[in-house]
Image 1 (cartoon, rainbow, N blue to C red):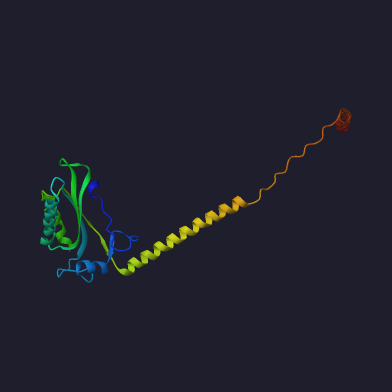
Image 2 (tube, helix red, strand yellow):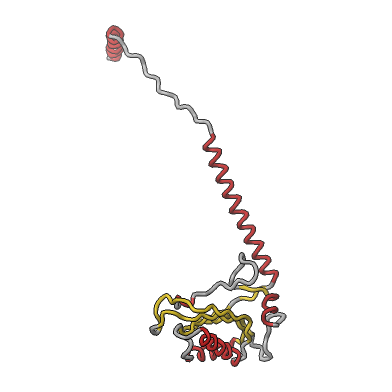
Length: 210
């Protein structure tokens, strides 16, 4: 995958949730549809985002006009544009067709899945589009987003509790009194008389054994 087409986080609402999903309510506000829709042919209309690069050697006005032409192509293929986000001119990670800069544009749209390939082919042959990428994104219900948020909160709370437990254990260990270590008791050294007596006892014992 071209690094220039790395996905931008599309954050609609809380920044803590999945940046690649929006709720059905938000989608309806953006697109005018009350819920994910279906065509009469029973082919499901799916939701996609199109990120593409326009030549950086054009002016801002020329790039804006090119972007409008690309969006018109989406509409000509019976696509419904939900959101448009023109990022402007940015430096490329490496040169493409002797270009070091490009204009980025992000388009969220919905289209019948069977018509996506035709749209991709048109964009691939468009000389104004330096690079493009189409990826699907998920439209989640408010209940799904709420459940995911609750799960994230539980995970965060558990991690925080484990961290606090580790800190408390470390504090207790640091404050625990040191256990004294008993020093070894050394036997008193024998004088020569005691040593001779001990030796005689050992020799007597040897004689009894014999």
